[in-house]
Length: 240
Image (cartoon, helix red, strand yellow):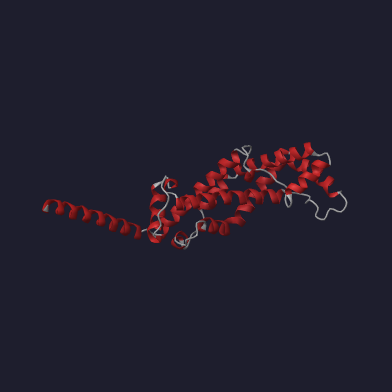
């Protein structure tokens, strides 16, 4: 009996010591290491977006073209005018232009994360907001991203011929009497913003997954940083 009690006490000592060690290790995470963990989560989100845009014809509405404003109403009006084939061509060509632009802009997206300065990494990690890092990334880097991304979008729209097809549609739609809101003469800015916004959404979804799901923490750094967040918040992430 004494032997059993001794073994139990020894095991308990190691167990609680292990917990204390984990807390101590977590407590020594530097702002730099936390920032690197956040950046790794953001980067994984970007790769999710790259993969989606590389396969735009798999039924994912986020990576396909849609007319600005009341898209469904505009599209129906154009089809009723007998412009179904042109609508199909515009949709296909703008979708292809967005896909090509995102693929060409991979280094721009990745470098924007790499070069981003995160002053209060711990505050972002421990904010309780499942998209805090993405929101910081978006607010800090959106202007630079759009500036660098827009010329690529302009180029891919010219290459695919999407702009010429769209001009035909815009003229037909804008000539309809009593149309309250006419189509813009160019959709380049809209296409660039739509693609960037979609990328941020993929990043946000991946960050939320990493924060709540252990299996999404696929590297030691992610496990260490987001495990620390769990300890601080007393969370129990999902295990698959």
